[in-house]
Image (cartoon, rainbow, N blue to C red; front, side, top):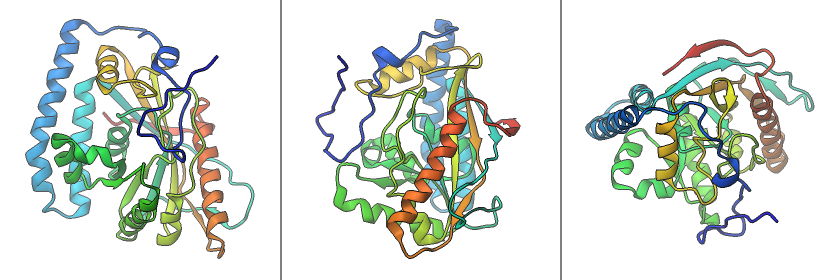
Length: 304
């Protein structure tokens, strides 16, 4: 019999993953020494505390400058935690409706970056890979230290337990996209262990349609010695402290971000179908990357 942990705060419309630390998390292939673990914790604490004045000052800068500052800070924090970040580009063939087309990278327009969700590390990993603004759950904005850092990074918030506020969150993302920002979202709506992933919810894709912005799928894949690792996951009845402890204990933890070409959907006058089409294509791309090394992946580069 499979028992799914349901937090008391979860409402009926919120997605749930079957993943649990007891069944999904693998033992570390190589364990860091106690001294190295202490060094990682101390280093991460120093980066967090040192980031507060930087976050306060960064609010005075332009969005581009703020995103670049956040990118460097995220790389430093991941390095302190012992997480190595690699980035690669993948390609894919787009089938189906001709209204979907690949578009060039960059160009000054906003991009909705969508990825699978495994860990509390994911927003840091994406920020280290590309200058971007994460879309995070509103609870993050309630933690004193993290709240200051998040605001300095331009994080957008969404109330996951308030369905009526979803249009407001989507409108906020659309505004950021119109301003030329790259916004990263995790459309599964919850975390999975990394061996599997959940379906993409279409709601956030409405922001890309409203802003006429491109959608760029990305796959996050954690590994130890080229073997998929669930140690960084933050799922089910897991605790944040427990997940952090596993990360600092793991000696050779690498995360690969595979960036697929951005896609754009021509206006159709049918927003519901358009959202579903974008979500379906993005999910298929991300699943391709999660299944292994994507065909056509190239230009692998160490980020942090």
